Image: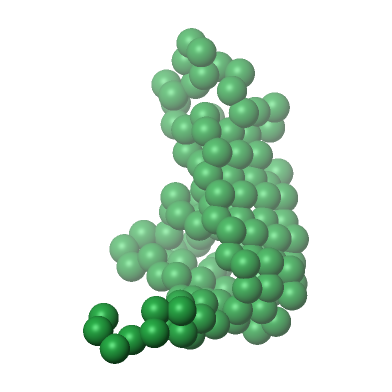
Length: 129
């Protein structure tokens, strides 16, 4: 933008980030749904995370749909990781009690046992104030 100091604009935007899922509450914010790695890292600021629905498949979660763990993928690690590394007043609008400001959570099960194997699927989240 002409006449705009881009460094200042970036600094202002990083002070408060708002992440919103508009139509469904899954597969976002540090999630992996095939044998892979999905990571969200937010380095600081007071942020907002808005997740509709029950949020069981969002924010530091993993799952693999049946058929996606065939052949080579049978033993590949699947990792979903969410890291919010700063900000003392983050807001989590999500229907999961384990997720929140100053919290650490580890996925111990999947919402569908046919789509989550504790030997290969991992979900982790951290909100560090």
